[in-house]
Image (cartoon, rainbow, N blue to C red; front, side, top):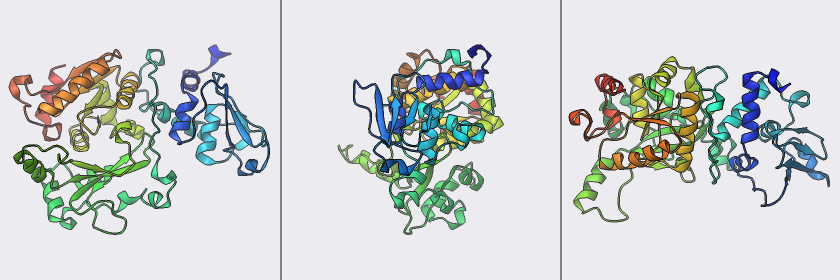
Amino acid sequence: MNSKKSGYIQDVDRLIEETRVEQVLSHYNLPLPQNGTGEYRMQCVFNDSCADSQYGNLTVRLDDPANRIYCHTCEVRGNLLTLLYGLEHRRPPAGGRLRGAEFKDAVAKLREISGELFESDATSVRSSAANTTPVPPPKEPGNIPLVRHEKEAARQLANLYEELVTDVSEMSPEAAQYVRKRDWLTPELMEKWGVGWIPGNGRSLFRKSYLVYTHRDERNQVLSYSGRDLTFEEKWNKWLRDGRPEGKKPNKHRYVSGYRKGQELYGAQAIRLEEEYVRESLERRGVVVVEGMNEVLRLETLGVAAVGIGSNKATDTQVQKLVRFAKHAGNNRILLLPDCDEEGEAGFKDLLWKLAEHGIAIRLGCSSKMNEGRFAGRQPEDFDAEDIEVIDGWD
């Protein structure tokens, strides 16, 4: 029977087998199983009334490759996909088993949790599953979409991006000046990515001296927001003049408290695969990696699909995701475009080494010494079409 399964179903079976229950529980901030136990008990996620029964616990078998689950009260049973559906919708699948859209939705959630971001049922931009090398899952809990946050105040922020101002004529002078210096940062691009200035009001997470960015997960759900300090350059120069005092180094970006930015990649929404330029860029360059949000946005205007690590140093979780993305969507290739200064290059040297250890074909697209110093002191957000031609020409 297995030989007659489609490649898609075989790939889903593989994903179910390789995804540990602990990954799913961590994603939903649920307690982890005790070491040495063969099964895990939890409150039923399909029917709230099961909690009133002495048999109301849901059993998850940890030693079964399919991670079989069974509720002793409502008698819902299934595999890891069924558990995910219950955690997402708090009800059992229609008809007792997952089919059609319900099945695809559960598979998409499983891919998100496992880190296989660039998998897409609607595209063929992926290499064979046989080339996939499983990477250990992150140990710390993941970020939860704001719409499912335990706090009501946080849930109400899920659509804050709708209030962001993208018209420079309506921004503060500092924000307008920042955007005008980047003529590629158009209102259309900002609206698409959830970027803009927000007036001071009760729902504002940032003061007027910040440009706000929306951070989304692989399923395009809003996880959090961050603000780019529009007075950073002034603070940075003062920090340098003061002799770089410890503990006073200014931060370019401010993130919402509790958001684990080291677990995410900016621009990692799977929906991007529906865009032709993304598919073409992946085919030509593999997965392009940069530091920040502006780099991702600027490169989009140049036809380059990139993801940002939010720093000059990648976390182990980000490395794991990049490895998976490269294997599934980038033909096992990654192109690194660091900020071409001392800090940027130092961080990406470490990233290059970590990625190479996973057998990924790595290419350095720019540095302060390449091409007779063309990129020295520059960042990808400053690049133009001619720079991209030069970078592509190195391949």
